[in-house]
Every structure is written in C-alpha cells, then in structure tokens.
Length: 141
View (cartoon, rainbow, N blue to C red):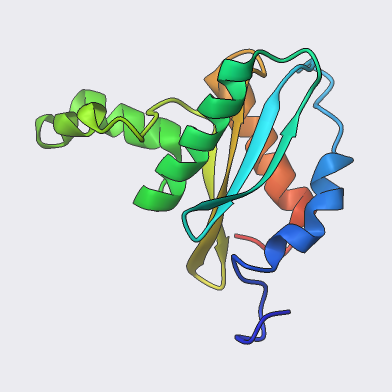
C-alpha cells in the first residue's frame, strides 16, 4: 500500500506475479508481449521467448498512449479516424493508436496502464490487457 492508502502507480507492480502467471485466453495463443507503465515510466515487461521484438515496443507505446490520454488506445484510434479535430494525434510518434492499451483505474484515478501486442490483433491484445489488469488488481475499474 502506498502513502495514499491505496495501490498507486509506484506500488501496483508488486502484484506483477499475478500477471506473469496469467494464462492467455484459450482462443489466443502466445506469443504476446505485455508492458506496464506507471507515472509515465516503464515498470514491467513480460515477453514470450518467441515474440518479435517489435511487439515489446508496440506494447509499451500502447500502454503509454493509454496513460497519456486516460483512454483505451483502440478507442482513441477510432476517435482519431472519425474526428477531424483529433486527426493530428496520429503525428505524435510516442502514441500508438491501435487496440491493446488499457488505462488502470482505481478509485476514479488513472494509476498506470497496460499494453499488449502480438496476441493476434487489436481485439485480442485489448482482451489480454484487460484480463491482466483484472488478475493483478481485482479492485481496478
């Protein structure tokens, strides 16, 4: 527990063993890469041995996108495609506007984000990220 008497972006990775032991959904076969970001910094990475290195970078950028924008990376990508006022976001090199990045919310606050890449498409990536958050932080929103 942190000074705020709730799990925060500095201490929630202590639950990382729950994420490491998370089995991939039966319909989603590894390899996939999972990155966790808190406070804008990479705090944990889990990568299958045979996953391409680009997936590790993609997972980190998806998590960063979710943390930076307080939204799921895929939903932000959809907004960029449909909202002319948001289209310039696709020029920000740190953002990856594909599904798989999910902010971690606790008590209404974004405390970090999880990004997954390499699970066989954005929908699978997002599902894995959501399951990882649920396994590591059952009280997350």
